[in-house]
Length: 413
Image (cartoon, rainbow, N blue to C red; front, side, top):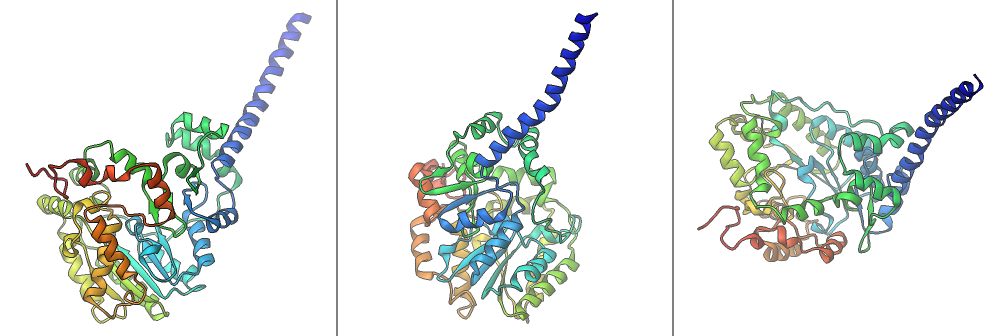
């Protein structure tokens, strides 16, 4: 009887140890992963680290708008850009004046309105560059909700992040182990990597708020060049995502966007609005599909709406109209650096009195275009130079992939 009681006590002790030990062990390991991954709970150390030197930032724990909002107010830039991920390749060295990118935010009229009310009211940029996406005006797609979320996650969300990422297979298990042991490199040259995605995948934001795709370019270098555009064609085929077919034009969203942008212009900033560009090969695919007629209605409506406005408006939907070819695009709908250099120079060519004319590094951009025609990435900055020193990223560019392919990625045999 005594033996049974001792066994029972032993089982209970083991169960209690497991009940206590498993959560404690997870807490210790998770805490170490978060610390080694530089997934800070507060935005303050991130701002301090960013402003000390070149960084690659991709912290998953903090909402993007919390980090970028704090960076914007700390930098107090004279020039900013707002829009979806398609505005992320506009960089500080494009300009002769101070710049910080709010790219990834300001997609849709309500988000732009929130940026104006929460940030631009505290610091008024001289020039606000805004990129519009055609799909935001598709009536059957959900409109902009206007919410950009909380400013900081709670402790529970912070400590549970590694488990959530593992459950959703965001990173390979061995990378969590390497983070826990502190053996993943957190530097690339003199560039400090902040956050899981920057450390593990080498993608993220620079100190100017623009985005770098270094990890993806390593993969592109080993794949057929057509892979870069395949996602866009697959979305067209499957009628999903930003290439949803047979939309009706949401003309009310045009009016809402115009009103918000005009109010921003009235508040003292010069506002330059661009219908973001698409590569010609993808446009040809959209035309062949015959299901994107709402864009044909959208383009003249936007031009007409801004015709007598203080807002500068430019329709650069077809990248070929300003000389940018498909190989200057990162993929089927994200332009690369050379694409946006060409676009900005075309603006001041069309309109010499544009607000951009006084702030654009015109001579420098022309020199870079001349030496990087047909390429996606220039990265003429500390982050770019540090990564190029460790990998020949030109291997991902069209001109290095095959002598018998033109810059559109098509065979010329």
